[in-house]
Length: 476
Image (cartoon, rainbow, N blue to C red):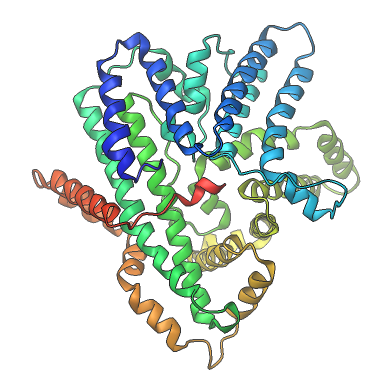
């Protein structure tokens, strides 16, 4: 069940809101938890045992959190067991078959398991809780209902944002009373997110459909560029729309869910882009992987040796280089069990390093050059990200840079003109122009309600007509 479906909009959400607002405040978390389990179960109807695995994971991690805080056993050992447990579940479902293929292991049969929806997101959320208890940033939650509500709250269960327990602890524990203004504000954000998904992202999918009609080897350079731009915009509005809907639902429930995007296409470097795109994931890797690696004993020892024998600046560069490589390799692997995702992570790592060496200094002086540089880097990254077939990927990367007489062809023109409205809409709303216009227009009394109502009506109409796709990040 996706947020942009009639089942959710016309059945699940109204039933949930009626139950949530009329139930006594002390039972609100139970209400959220039961609906969240039902929401997840609906998405796992073909594999109902996945619900049992999720609930078992909640119980085991609840115990791990308490043990880390109370046990007299070495806390690092308990942390190791907790992280091993969670990573093992993720590995079995997502990476087991991938590693068999990579290492050509013929003695072990593939599992061919269906990937549980949202497993990458809720596993990282669980581990953030375990890490924070270990580092004494929060106390272990003694109330199983409260902890479970935080982990599998349906607005962000399937595709994030990846929340920290410290950010929502007060909202979950207190008696939440949502006023009319907060509800309407949440509804407005939800509808804008719905429009982002249905009106923009889903329409942009037409470009990929039209491109896939042709054999890869017959695609012109311009067609590949157009395909990558459209895919990137589709991915952005799809995920951004989901994040807005999650934030809106959170507001309607009295729970503050963090922003996950901050105008990423305004960036002038890859580093800045990733501080603006999928903010919760970048923050997770920074706090729970990058910093711990940099502070680890082995890296500290290496930094000390290099500082003594070479220079302090060189030592910092090398240790940062190692830590960043591990982080970006893992970031790529997190997105999918295919080589192209690993290459995509390494691709961004290379540009992060180059920006530290010299590109960062250039773009500080000439922002326009930096912006053009970033857009090109990002477009190429979408080509890598969207092609799991390596032979197709290599062909497209090579073809993109062939600026000859065959760069543009009739097929590209036809695809562009057929999807012109969606492409123009995507490019326009990726800028800050619509927001600036909206801020001026909403000063007119009642216009805000009209705009939101039109977005809702058009979205529902498009969903009814069948113009609706699953969220792209569901498969990660």
